[in-house]
Image (cartoon, rainbow over all chains, first blue to last red; front, side, top):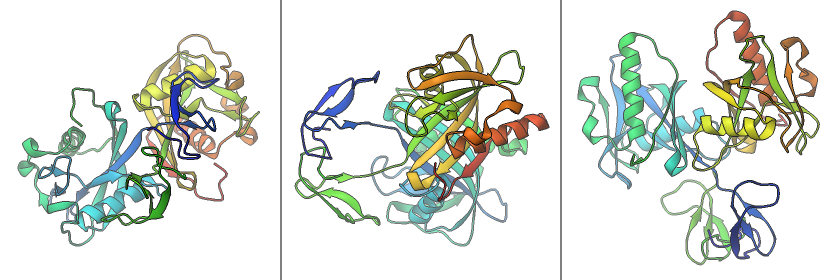
Length: 182
Length: 182
């Protein structure tokens, strides 16, 4: 960040009056530019028949092109977390879902992200969106654990299958620390 | 947002190639500037003695100067959601806490915020920080429902006291819609 997005002035990094942290402050207009974590929201999509399969997407874009993930992406302004999960599932897997409860919150502080995963139920078909190479409904035994794109997805799915074996779904909170890659 | 914070060029609003939403795009370097929701994280701080009182802060700053709230504020880069709750409680109520489980997630999409509230236990004393006029440990019967600063705080406390009466704390998800003021 080099320039003020309000006036175009140059930025310096200093602790503003009354603050405790160094911030990007405009030398020209004094505007303070805060940097805050972003929310990534996704969904564990189950088949409505309850046959135990869940929906995975193989990534068509970097990072982690070619690896498997749950449908997920950056939350947008103006939507709720549940709406973000529904939208991302539609965009990445062309799949309409009935959204369920929030299942997992995973902090990824070294990349300034918080990941949320809902549970949801597939309503109809699925197909790769522009950011996916393929989509698949996968049994627990066929989860490609060694080819998952993100550690948060691995953590989320481990908790999900553990809960499922116990016949009771809770809410899970976790944090990833470096040298985690994601 | 008027200028590119990378190169100082002027911005236009258009749908970038491969995107579906209008974004702020730099006319000079092509950089796309995304706007994403911010996380506000706070805590319902209980006395460790379990006498049922919780910690409230009376705001010394706008918005809602003079009204009561739970200690809460914007999550910072580089921290986890739990660390944000601990830090905000220290900053606003000079109170060290043992952090507990996440209790509530409240979407406030019309102001592009997601509010998270943890439960926590007071470890020692409390006093107003620079953003608070006063702090107080308050019984349920003395909660100033008509003088709470934010609707998300009201929703969170209603769920908290309901759960407490039932002797069982769950995880709560909710959304505020306009014309909610916060």
